[in-house]
Image (cartoon, one colour):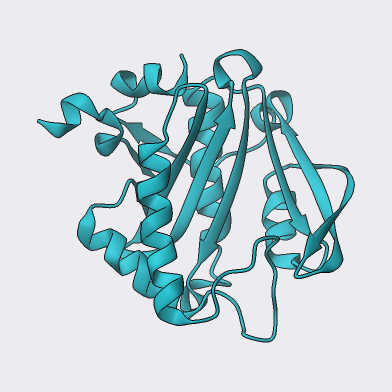
Length: 212
């Protein structure tokens, strides 16, 4: 079976409302259509890397990104790019990534939600799921994140989950400077918090792929 060669296909993170998993072909198509429909108002640009403005191009970029991250996976440089499902419906994407994780034990995350699914606490729940995987499943010592200062939704999720501010940096987006707020969550701060129940299935055979 393909899962014998690529056990990440069987990895599942489940929370009270969500399931996170590598998408199959149908779920990847649904994720692409969700991105094409829009993930932020057209008059706002909350990301450091702007998405394609044309919907079909945006959808293709999602599919290609998932293929790229699977094809380029290496235990010293990996990105677990998961589809987020609520009641079986694809609602967004949550990624957890790291370089030299076997030594550094630090992860970073990115995510997005379809417009219709924002403002319901899903963003917090899906980030909590990958943080549980990182700290409790993989033994991470810290999780890093960041968001533009004009992206209050992302910053609010980080604060809810206990991240501490870790300075500012300047980035260039479409030829103009923007300010990014860096954030850091330590293992000690994570362990001290009341946490959402998360179940991780299928992790053991995946550990060598994470550099463990």
